[in-house]
Image 1: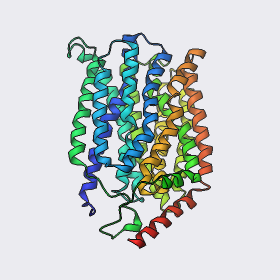
Image 2: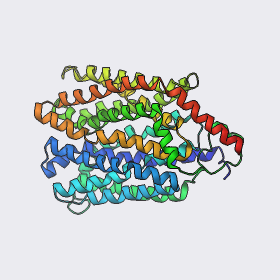
Image 3: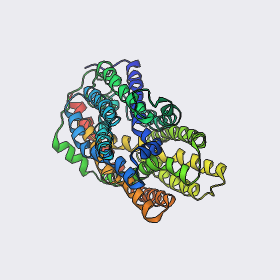
Image 4: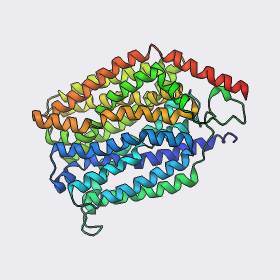
Length: 435
């Protein structure tokens, strides 16, 4: 297969950005609907944590399966299937009437949440390693923007939709709409995105119109998983996703119950913070690319700085007096800027040390390790909150502890990343010689 024209990769990024934006909106909107859904089913913090952990657990279990399928079959077509599943499961979760039913159906929405390794792997075959960080940063802008869009839909649109679909509450109606968009995106991806040969964008194959077809091998995956950089990436991922899940599912409630923000104050405060968070993905990815050109340690250095600064500024924000909203906003803005620095750089690092034919599986294993612990983060935070009577303490304990661990684990990765990247490109160079 010949390499695509210069415009087509950008077109694919646009489609995937739209897919991720709508999917993240659907996935993350539930945090902003906490008070409405809790009122419907009469939930406490522990039950609310169980609902969110359910989807995370399902997604975690399915990561290795999705990764294997992506490395064996067409990633584009499997992404279309994931979008179809997203739409269908969201529809079902919007109509159940009991807590048990909602727990089960909302958990089923995690099936498609583990579908991203194939998307990132396919993008890696459109763009060279020198620019992947910023491309992943652009794609990951959609997570915080989706969260912001979800806030707007939950606070401003959902209340107006009560009764629009029969006698359904507004939160149910909004999930019917986002589920329908998942079905639309399934069609767009199926017909609009082309599969690319694995490894096509690696520098060793520059100037070659045709490259060999690299097939998935268990031995290749095992070799990647033996690399010491991956060990540290896995461990930091296990700790690093805890803060994200706690903040996603509890921070909205924290603002309203602890800091006494009304809906308007939440939106006016968190709207700009989330925009800054979105910017942080691109800034972190771009800085990682820039430093990677100067040292192979560059992406890890940027990641370690991000988690350390994020922990410092979150601590200062939470400890700011409730009455001092301006200072709280400043510290939360700084937290939001540095929080996402790791994300695009970790994805790029996994692909920097993995053979093209096992990249989806390698990243899926990384996500599996991440979420095997982080899936319990909402329940853990809820349990701490119930036991201590302090949601503020629960957020601080989970987030600060996790980020400090990540910082030291990144220091460990710095010892091995140069060697592991060089060993990958030695293999690719040998393949290029063989044609």
